[in-house]
Length: 448
Image (cartoon, rainbow, N blue to C red; front, side, top):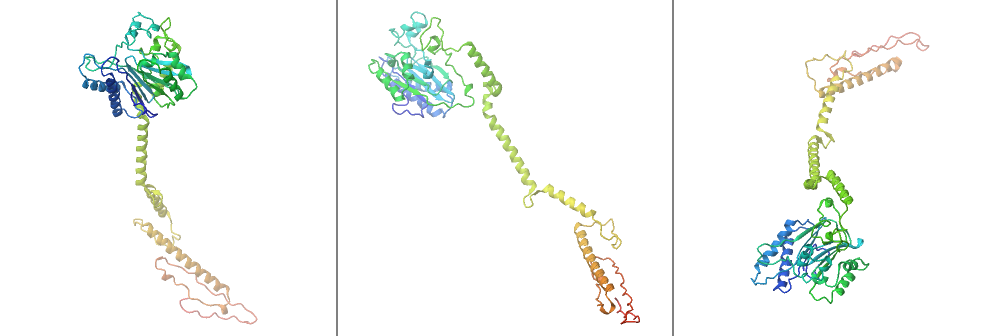
C-alpha cells in the first residue's frame, strides 16, 4: 500500500493498493515494488495540484515494470500483483486498475455507486461471453483466476484501465480494496455503511468488524472527500465515469446489479445528454473550445503585460516633459514664454509725443522694455510732485510763499525724455486795507 499504513493524511493525493498473487512466489515483493516505484516516479514528476495525464501515469507504470524485471528470479511461477490507483488532482481525479482488486466511487447523498471497476478475471469474461449470469460470478470457481496482472519478463506488458472523473463532490467516498474484502460484503452493504450518519472512524470500524472472519488476506483504502474547490476550466476536463466500459455500473442496474435489458440506470438520459452538449457549447462560445483553452489560461496575463507596458511608456513621457520644480510641462513653459513676449511686444509707451521714435528695425529685448517702463513710471511720479508744488504756490499769498528748488528733470538720465514744466506765475497781490497800493512782486532768483 502507498502511503504506508498510518502515514496517510489529508495532504496525500496519490493512493495505491496492490495485492500479491496467492500461490505465486514473492507475491508480497511484487506488490511492494509496484507501490514503491510508481509512487517514486510520481512524487518526482507530478507537481502540486497538477492534472495527471495518461502519459505520466503510464510512465510511472513502466518504472514499476522495470523494477519487477530487475528483480525477476526466472522461476517458472513468476511473482505478480494486482494494482488499484487513485490520484486526486485539480478538477477531479484519475482511477486505474489491473486485476481483480476493485475501486468504488460512492455518493452517500444519492445512496448509490457512481463507479465500480470491472474485474480482470476469468469469471467476468465468462459472463461477457454469456456463459454465466452476473449473480453467479461471486460464487464461480473461476473468480480468483485473474486475466491481467503485473509480472516481470512479459513479452507484452499489460495495460491498466484508466478512468477520468470530473464529477467529484464533497462527502463522496473512494473505496480501493483487494478481493479478500468482498468475501462477505456486497455492494448494497458497502453503500449502506458509508451512508449512515456516523463519524469516519465509526464507519472504518464497521468495515473491520464485517471482514474480521474473512479467510483471504485483505486490505483497503477508504478515502473521504471533505471539500471540493472549483476553478476556471474544471468543466473542460474529461469525465469518463458515466460511459466508460470498465465501469461495471454501465452494464448493470442499481448498485451494480444487472437488469434484463443490460442497460444501466446510471446512464444519462438523452435529454440530459442534450443539455450537457448545450452547456458545453455555451462554454465553448464564451471561453473557446478545448483546443484553444491553453490560450485562455494566459489571456489575462498577456493583457496585464500590455497594460503594464502602456503605463511604463506614459510614465517615461511624463518624466521627460514635466518640470517638477514648477509643476508644469516643458512644452507648457515654452508656450507661456512665447505668450509673454507677444504681450510685451504689444505694450505701447505712455507718452508717444515725448518719447523718441524707435527704429523699427531695432530688436528690443523684453528686459529692455521692462526697464524703460520702470523709468517712465519714475518720470511720471516726478511730474506729479512738481504739479502739486506748483498748485500750492498759486493758492498761497506772496508773504507766505516758501520757494522750493524745483526738481531738475535733467537728472533723470534713463528716461531721456524732454520734460516741460509749466511756468508758475504768482498771482497779483490783492488790495486790502493793510496794503492799499499794489506792490510789485519780488524779483525771483534766476533759474526758477
